[in-house]
Structures are given as C-alpha cells and as structure tokens.
Length: 359
Image (cartoon, rainbow, N blue to C red; front, side, top):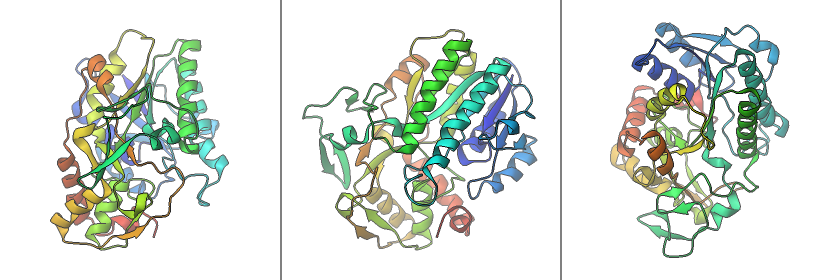
C-alpha cells in the first residue's frame, strides 16, 4: 500500500509518517512518501528526520497542480497540509486569498490527483468548523481556573457533558480557516460520491506533542510551555484576561490505529465525518497550563489583556463518542504525558521558539 502524506514536514505530517512507518500494517507493507512546500517555520528540521528514516518526500506546492505531476501513484492520501491559524487572512500577515488557496484550492488539486489514481482520501479537518457564535452562547461556569459547560442549563443539539459532537452547528462565522476546511470537507465527500473514491473526514481537536512548532496562533501548547520555560512575555487575551479559555488536547500518534482501520474499511457508510479529540479527561485552560509550567519550571508572571479578539472561543471539547462506537477508538495519551513530552523537548532544544515562532 502506497500512502501520500501532504504537509509531511509539518508537525502532524511528520509525526504520522514516522509512527506509520514504526507500526506498519498487519496486512501489507506501507510505502510512505510525502510532499511539502516548507512554508511553516521549523519544517526544515523534519526534512532530516524523514531522510534518515528513508521516507521520501517531494518539494512541492499543493496550490500548483503542476507541482503534483511528478508525484508517484498512490493508494491513499492523508491530507495534513494546511495553514491552521484562525487569524489567517485577517491578521495582516497573510491575505484572505492566500489562506483560501492554501486550504481550499490545494484540496481541489489533491482530490483531482486522487481521481486520477483512483485513490482514497483522508482529510485531517478541524474542530474550528463549528460555529463561533453558537460556541460563545453555550452556558459556562468557572471551575478550578477553567471554563466548564453548565450542563444544568438547556443545551443546543450536538453538545453534552462529553463535549461538542459532529452534529453541532457549522453555521458561519467560523473564521476563514474554519470555512476553508468545511468547504474542503464538502468537496472531498462530493468527489468520493462522484468518482467512487473512499473518503474519510477526521475533525481533530487541538493537536499537540513533541516537536510541535509553537506560535500564539498555531501550536499554542508548545508555544506556552516553551515560553514559560524561557521566561518570555505571555498574555491571557480576552475573557477578562484570566486565562480560563479551555480546550482538550490530542496527540497525533493516537490517530495511527484509526488510520489503519480507515484504509482497510471495505464499505462506504453514509456518514463519514467523525470527531477525534482528547475529551473531558484531556481538557485544560491556559491558567491551568500555566500552573503546570510553574510546578515544572518555577513561577512566571502572565500579563492580562481583557480585550476580546476576533474568532476566540471560551470552551471547546471534542465529543468522540461516535468514533469510539464505530471505530473502537479512544485517545491513549493522557494530558500529563503530552505536556511532559513537550517540556522535555523544550529543555533539550534551547532555540526552539526562535526556530518555530514569531518574536
């Protein structure tokens, strides 16, 4: 089986490539190769890791269909390429056209390639396809320095104590990033139906782990831990400047058993969209992460900036219950293990922030 990973030199792409190679398939050998345009700061570091492992990769831009012509045939694509910032296109660092080209036009080019090779397509989508106003209206309380869902009050469809399910509202606004991923999901499913291609949509929650490139808008867990260790300036932004905003975290390696099951699945179920996240057990707030860092590295003062910021949300935990039933999938790495892995990497790589973040 030949598997193409797009964005293979990014954090998620390289992590999946190495883990797939390590675990292999029970039925047949897995030939992994990938493509990357090295647009993300830090991605060059993974080029050497992949080369040492003998994983072939191509330097190409998915926005340019001609860059894909040189790629060998494949059986499946795992699409891990994206600009994952909700601020992209509105922060003055990238244009609105650029984010749509990266995250939507690129998807079209990859789907056309799948059509040519009659290959399957697995899209690593995002929790940010869910409606920002609908999330902001959820009843919240504060508990132990974190926002928590007030399940004693009426809740909309798709929300429970387990978190946000795949049938929660995707009504705009979502951010240009979220809209581009939601549109990519729709196109992928349409290509699957029109051309008989197997397609899976995996909406992933906050992903984190060793080697994650850290910026305030991308890779927040790595950024926060590295910045606390190096005593860099940090701020709690919005939500009264208290750092109560809460997410759950998932390690990309926990997707590996799922990916093997998806490429081997013989049928075409009607619903092919699933949530994958760490769930309530792996949920944390920025304030709680700061406390964890203080226990590990010593106290570090965090400034408060209560000014609201476009597209920020107070709480988002992924409900992966349906994935558990359909795929017998559950996250394996605990919150503490993920934080510890990142912290050890930060202590061993003094210049990691300079390599991967904007200062």
